[in-house]
Image (cartoon, rainbow, N blue to C red; front, side, top):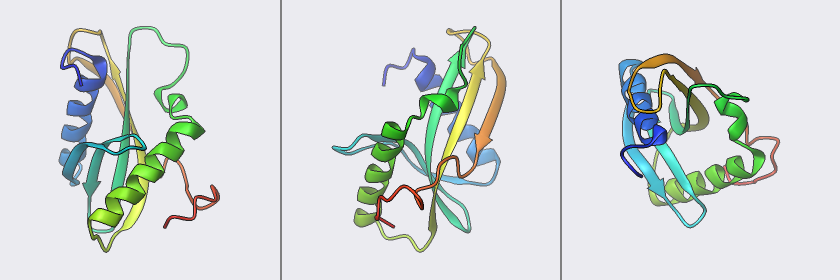
Length: 129
């Protein structure tokens, strides 16, 4: 990822935020043929697959709204691949971390929203977990 982009800054901020909240970040930018998972983290109970969405300046929609059903399917399939390659006795959970920055060129944070269990695979019929 280009280190000058909002996405890059957002992922750094999200990883730091999760660490401060007691999560252990175990992987960033896990890539598969299905897509990429921005952050994989754990706590005592969950294996988190985290999508980070960053916005700066004026925006029409919330960052979470950019995590479409198609994007969710890609994340779920990438998570399934990760879990098939790595053994964890934790419940998977899909979170979104929204990062709101003051500008496109700085790390000045206006707000961070951590949306736990932001989307559910149970009713999606993915049949993976």
